[in-house]
Amino acid sequence: MKGRGTDWNPNNRFHRQHIEAVAEEGLDDCPPRKAETTVRKETARSIITRNQSPDVPFEQSMNPYRGCEHGCIYCFARPSHAWLDLSPGLDFETRLSAKTNAAALLRSALSKPGYQCRPIVLGTNTDPYQPIDREHGITRELLAVLLEARHPVHIITKGAHLPRDLELIAELASMNLASVSISLTTLRPALKRSLEPRAASPGRRLEIMRMLASAGVTVTALIAPVIPIITDAELEGLVGAAAEHGAASAGYVLLRLPHEVAALFQRWLQTHAPGEERRVMNRLREAHGGRDYDARFGHRMRGNSHWTKLLEQRFRLACRRHGLNGRDIRGLDCSQFRNPGASSPQLSLL
Image 1 (cartoon, helix red, strand yellow):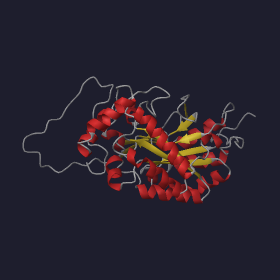
Image 2: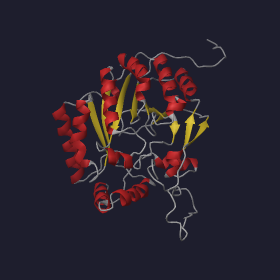
Image 3: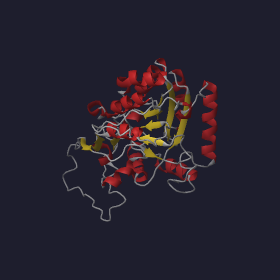
C-alpha cells in the first residue's frame, strides 16, 4: 500500500477471535486499495506520563497524539493501539487521536502546588511532528505553555515541519530549557521510504539538525533503530553525517520487536528483504537469549551478544572520532520554573 508502512491489520493481542480474509478467484489484478488517515478529537484526562525506567534519562514525558502517521514499520509503540481496541498494524498509522485539550491539561498540571519541575520529553511514544500536527498544531501549543512556565523540554522527532516552531524552541534553548533529538535510521532514501514511509527524508532530517544547531539548540542524533543486516553497516556513516550537520551528541537503540511488532516486521522483511529475513531474526534472537525480544530493563534497548558488544564498540569509536560527547537531557535547567497559573475562570483562594 503506497505511503503506508503496512497494509496488514492483524488483530491485537487482546482479541480472542481472529478473522482472515481470503482472496476470491479472479481478483488478483485489482488495483491496490488506499487507506485514508482519520483523526479523532480526544478529550484526554491527563497529559504527563511518569516513568521509573533506568533505561532512559528522564522521568516525565507527554504525547499530543495517539498513533503515528509516519508509519514506521518497526515502531515499538504500535502495540499501544491495542489499548484502544485497534490494530497495531494499519490502524496505528491511519486511525489517530489528537488530544485537543493537551495544552490546558499541561498548564493545569504545572500549576499544581506540589508539582516538582523535571525535564519533560515530548514525543516518546508517537512523533509530535507527524503530518497531522500541521493541521492541529498541538505541539506548538504545548511549547508555548512550557515557554511561559520556563519549563525544560527535550523533543524527539523525525518530522519534517519542526522548523515551523523553531523560534519557540530556540527561545527555550537560549535559556537552557530545550534540546532536540533527531532520529536517524538510514541515509538511503529508497530504504527510508519502505521503513518510514511518511517521515522526513534523511536529507531533510540532517538539514533540520543544521538549522537547530545554527539557532543555538543542542542537537542529539538518535541512531534508532539499528537493524541487523539491514542498517547496521551505516552506523559510522550516520554518526559522521550527524556530526557534520551540527549534532553535539549521539545515541543508538537496537531494533525492538514487542508484542505485535515482531510479526509486522517479519512480514516487512518477507516483502522488502526476502533473502535476509532469517539472518536478521537470528541475529536479534542471539541478542535476546533466543527470543524475538527481551523487555527487561537494562537489556531491551541494547541486547547482549558478541555482535551487540561489537556494535557498541563501533558506536563509541565513531562518536570519539567525530567529537560527539555533548550533554544529555539532564543538563537542562529546572531552576527557572515558574507556576503558569491554571487557565480557569475561578479565582484562587490565596
